[in-house]
Length: 146
Image (tube, rainbow, N blue to C red; front, side, top):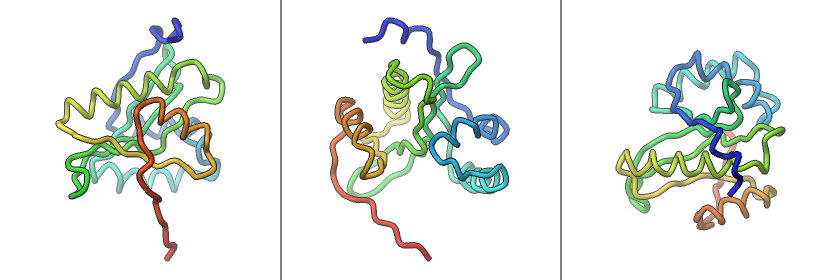
């Protein structure tokens, strides 16, 4: 494990104001996000229990994952990791591992029995990372635009 990993701190943020400050980091995942669209989405997402787990290097946010907790028949109570991104300048420095371990502990604390996430089919590097973290590919996530 990277010895510099110890310098990073993690916390859960729950307010729209805190989340909006992370828009530059979110844009590394989705460059087309506008301030207005992000604000509108967060209003709905937060109303449904959305929070963010954030990794900091000092005062700088260097990684994040949205987190939702809910239940499905096939998985039981689960935490979904969503909008997972590590700052381009910090990739391959253990941030993903720090984030994954933090979210795993959060899921356990909240009584979840499963953690789920989506990764683009073309993002094979992420697939390999998540498999190293103990995730298993179970299916495809289908979308239908309306």
